[in-house]
Length: 233
Image (cartoon, rainbow, N blue to C red; front, top):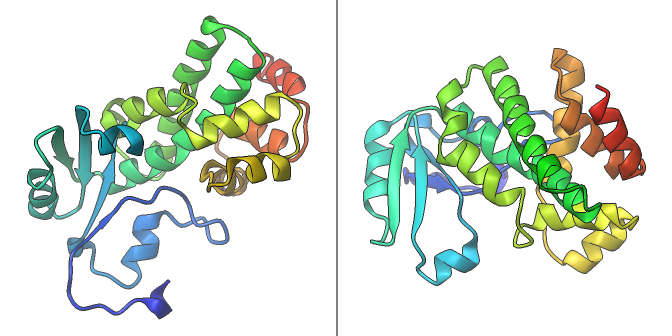
């Protein structure tokens, strides 16, 4: 990325979500390696692009170590988008990436027809898990209860509009990952993020049972076995 980037002193608003697989770096670290943190901001929150395109009411959060920059971007949103700001960039990055992993699990849960109780339990435990992970790296707890945390998680982990949720649906039907991705025809960020989380958890000794089972399913483990192991973990 750096080799193709010419720094003209511009500010940048990042909408991407994920963790760099080979290094385990968060995106703020990746961008921050060649752009000043004061010129970087990160957008998060529950927002399917199809609904934003229709100008449906939406609330988003802009995170930056430069609060003035965050407010500048938030104030530039159109009238149908309510903007909020904070300075917890790490929390925003962790939540934005992690929710895609829980969304894969949500798709598996619904695909196996495990019921509303199971989905609610999964999402709430997923919130606890992503918070634990974020706190390990200095994120603020309250960030995970905000739009970019719980808000985005609840949306992404329970809707067929989510690409990662549809990956989980495919896994629940016994489809191979290559087949699922071919049918999807789009990027599912939760897949590489799951691998990154799995590696980081081993290195840092962080308890991430849901992410670990999603990783196992992506490697071919039977989803019903993963559900059984989660219930007994």
